[in-house]
Image 1: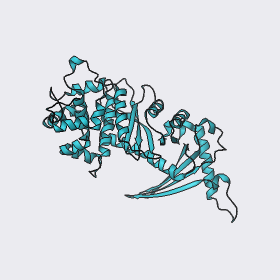
Image 2: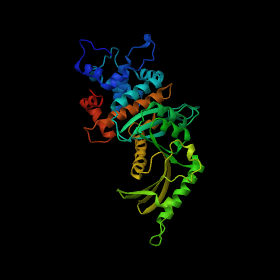
Image 3: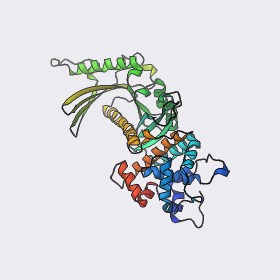
Image 4: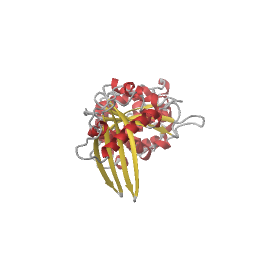
Length: 393
């Protein structure tokens, strides 16, 4: 987007903004004779619509028409506001890898260096973005807990699962010095190796997909904890596994819910026959959650493999930090209604998923409004100055 002598002050600021600078690298997928609208106009109107609570292509068109006079102060709009069909065609044809690369470069420009940053990886279904004969589409997202940013997301290949997408996403991210967490689906030797090769550490949740390993880790930690809690005569020491089991306890009270979490970690691995098959493995861990809600008490234990050395505070921080990506997925469905999106032509579902995460980052990084995401979306819809601030103008 070039600056012209008659360009408004807002248009000049838009040209210089970090987000639009990165948008400029997105290649327009349309042939020249069919380009009635500049791609930068399409992208800016689309992201502004999402920032204000819009959902699909019809919302983008209606939002653009309602805000035409305002958009005209800093966009060309030589042919007016694009139609919903134009938005659909652009996002269906836009190369998702190019758009993702733009997103990755932009988020890296915002990301602050945080020692042992928790980067949580998790998959999410785009449940309605499919035709009758298609399978459900999935995207895997990476959430940086301290920065409160979605670092990137990648669509899972058709007829595959998120295991195949995680290594690709790991290679696209700058993870040196980070602690990468995954749910049980990501607990794979290949993924552990990719994380170590990226000069990062891992905390991988264990469940039935690694049945033998899960049972071995569970048996060891359950026995070590039982030995630790066993009453002994004075001067009698517990076995080594119990004596070296590190522990941390936290208590949460909120709206009738009472929860105790006990984190256990052990670097004793001589018992684990397959330890050499897991690159960088240095410890195993367990979280015991005791919840009381309306007088009902439940106990749950979860088990982990980790490349972290013994340090239960760091292990606990990694486990807690993983829930940030679950919260992000909840926001995607509640505030952006991602689960209801019907965009399915070409690459539209994947590109809209990236655009929603870009919009979420813009909303998360703006801190002058002490409100949640939905509240910020309302403020953006009401206040042009606030919407420009979100765009970095």
